[in-house]
Amino acid sequence: MVGESHGEKALRVAYTAFAPLLFATFVAGVAGVAGVTGIACGRSSAVVVGSKNFSEQVILGEIVAQLLEERGLVVERRLNLGGSFICHSAMESGQMDVYIEYTGTALTAILREPVLHDPDEVYRKVQEEYRERYGLAWGPPLGFNNTYAMAMRSEYADSLRLSRISDLAAHAKTIRTGFGHEFLERQDGYPGFTKAYGLDFAIAPRGMELGLIYQALVEEKVDLIAGNSTDGLIEKFGLTVLEDDRRFFPPYHAAPVYRPETAEAHPVFREVIQMLGGAIDEAAMRAMNRAVDNDRRRASEVAKEFLVGKGWINLTSQGSPPYP
Image 1 (cartoon, rainbow, N blue to C red):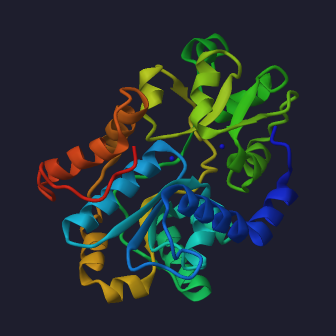
Image 2 (image 1 turned 180 degrees about the vertical axis):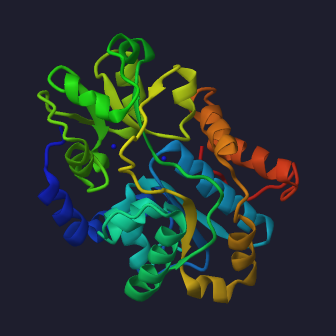
Image 3 (image 1 turned 90 degrees about the vertical axis):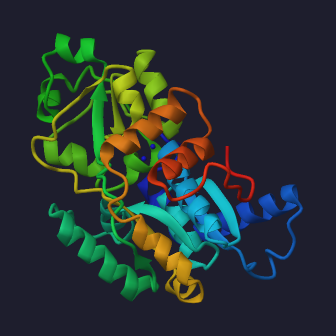
């Protein structure tokens, strides 16, 4: 499961030089608010489950956390932490044990490798490179591909007879775009997307938080957004998703990224990682996202309902206080 006041160079600098500092500041803030001690002196014995900062990620983080708790592990949640770069930095620095990443994001944004389109090839590539570069492991894919969805209000798309991304070129002088900050900077995002389709938008793209892009679209503040294919709000608002007719976007299969030493120390951790393989299809993920984003249900409740339905936890199971 996003203009910005700083450009691409600024983001790269922020990631390479300041992401660990930002993460450390975040942890220190959490420690101060929660009264947790010892973080600055080293990791606790709890398994730390993290997530990025949008609903799908928080749901998936809760699924992992609740499964681990059901099997007797103490879990510390660091959900809604930030974007891809912040989460990756937390993994590299040893401050987090597991989070869910997307293969295409890992390939292009983290590894900065050229776009590949075969899902198996992308998975093998990120698995090998993460092991060699960072000492991190990938679990099996969860079962869904959450690719970018270039979405518009249906009445607007129909009025211009737009059904494919390539159709945008004829109207690039008038279309107002709104994208998440990370999308604006990534090579598999705005720079590569506009180059691949020969798009020269006359109106500068509007950068905003991921949680605000659908609201901006339906309120007619922008005409085109980059959502995610598993977002429940696409169906809720009856949006038109333009076909990626030049197959620019790589596959974005969700899968756990984890620390191998954590799996070695806790056999049930490895068991949980493996049992999640193929467990969540696109329809299931979309339904969970809609339950949170549209029905305003707690991510922890939605995750628990999914796990109970799978028969993996009991309805009465109780773990540490969940993320809202």
